[in-house]
Length: 323
Image (cartoon, rainbow, N blue to C red; front, side, top):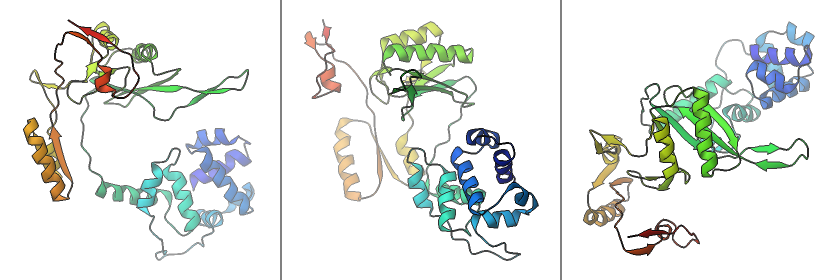
């Protein structure tokens, strides 16, 4: 109730705009607008709000009678629906809670609503704990949803790319907008991120972005040459190849699957793959098949086009020669 009173005070007494109220109270602009709408629908003003106890204010805003003692009949939130809706852009738990209260005015408050959903999620989600040491890794990628820039002179809006680097231990994040995801922008964004942090992480972990990784592979991806030179210049490395005791290493995904009660099979040779697939299909159950893949280019004479291998059927022109 303190946050609701503060929203009403800032808007009605201080005459602050919605965005300023949202920043001051730590709420979204949508939540501020919804609170003010409910207060207006209830016919409230600041003088009445000051005189009202919390339970009466809550009843006025959410049309629920104040109940002294006893348990209210509170319908539980539909956690499966919440989980599906959260995957949509711009949908937050706060918005979903407001929808829930519209359908069930006697429902749970926001904190309990979130607790119920998170307990439900914890019973259904498999997770792997990762421990990060300070300064060890920085994770880089572009945001999936592209923002836009508006030209103040013409009003024209054009989409841009949002580059992000986050430190593993602290989640300290650097972000900037660039025109493209092409190599010059990609490299320049790294240099500005390093300048922003005032240092360089021990390893930079990129996703399988084309500007960073030329040959996608879980174990030994091919790294763009310019990107590799950037790492050498700054005295860091790119964590695209995992090593342990000087040897290429990958987590044992089959063992991880078995630890969670799912059948896991580790395939060590090409001859083992077909029987493993056939057995998995016959079982009609979830099966994790861990297959080791290693890029071993075979030298050939004449001309060859590597993009025919990694981009079959596409019109690409990236021709190399082999001696």
